[in-house]
Image 1 (cartoon, rainbow, N blue to C red):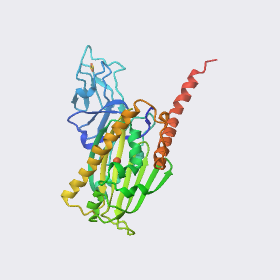
Image 2 (cartoon, rainbow, N blue to C red):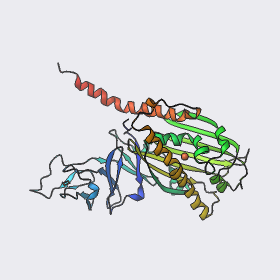
Image 3 (cartoon, rainbow, N blue to C red):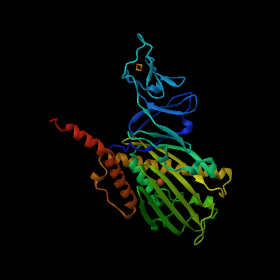
Image 4 (cartoon, helix red, strand yellow):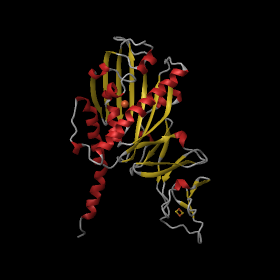
Length: 356
Ligand code: FES
Ligand SMILES: [Fe+2]
């Protein structure tokens, strides 16, 4: 299935791109090279020289331009060839590469790979990661997943799996009886689970200092298409109220690399009342990373391997009550993709009408 293109995707953490070196990644199945101009502005170009198709990231930065490693053509930040060191130095008209709009926001570098106008205001709000918001943050998380991003998106939207896959760490047995409410708000989907009087999972025991006593717990996941998630998750004393040291926001953002691989960026923001020692704070980040890397990732990789190249719906998956969110999400993605492709198909069929 093709990717939704008219959307902002996270290319990488902002700190990974600088003006001294070239950073590269495959995104939506296209090679992209990144760097910063001397003034700090980020640049993203197609990572393929139009001469003999060498990846430009193998080249060198010359001021604000890239010099190809093979024969020295230079491309500026708009993708235009600005120097041909050969012959009389004439630059062929086709000597250019695509430049993608990028924006630094919330500590991440966002990229627009679509063909419609781009508006930075459409970048999903992760203001809780900004310093001025006053949260204790844990950022920079990254895992390369060998599965299509939609499989990982289902994992995130439907958190019923934490009872089984993350038992003791993020999950506990009674969570399986959660009250689940799924609602759509425009293209945004919320999948909220409420679990009263359950065994406290390890990470929340550390956050809330419950010494193993039962808690009421919630996991409220929000999906903004195509692949941005924010989880509000926490515990409180049974029948009590949310306090500022039993919960956190989990940030999870997916970017397709190819049809069968995904860049997974994650972070967390804890409210200012959080009572973690520096050691516990480090342990909190380690526990989350362990859950995502050692528990979720192998499942996702195995799932993709089992599916092979088959279409998800063609496999006739068994549907359970917990699939309400993921199915709505898949339908929303299909709708968006169709809407994105329709104008193209219409204009193609117009061209096919024979001239009279
Ligand atoms: S391949 Fe880039 S200049 Fe020849
Ligand atoms: Fe998980």
